[in-house]
Length: 146
Image (cartoon, rainbow, N blue to C red; front, side):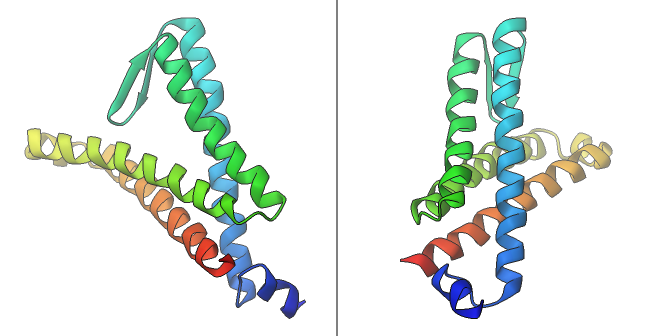
């Protein structure tokens, strides 16, 4: 079993568990983005992904592309392809930049109001941290498979 893990780019079983958690997070959020983009297109409402705020057909295209990127990364990981980790890291980076940029924009526009809604901002910071950690985990996996 150890040689099998080494061939996959892992040194310890904890790396396998972290990769499973990271890819599960990516798969879940990718499916939510895909379904959300279809509902946004059908309902004509706003697709809000941090800095990306679009409606209608652009929401379907952007949400569909992001969702397909995440799903493709998970499918390639299932088939044990090295490109999967790079796609997953790119998927996570998009969300870290979009959501993190929106949080920073809100913070600099009104720092007092930002601190007044601590539960909402804390949940956004947790989401950013999970995307960042997932991206780092799969990026480390990509470096181990080269």
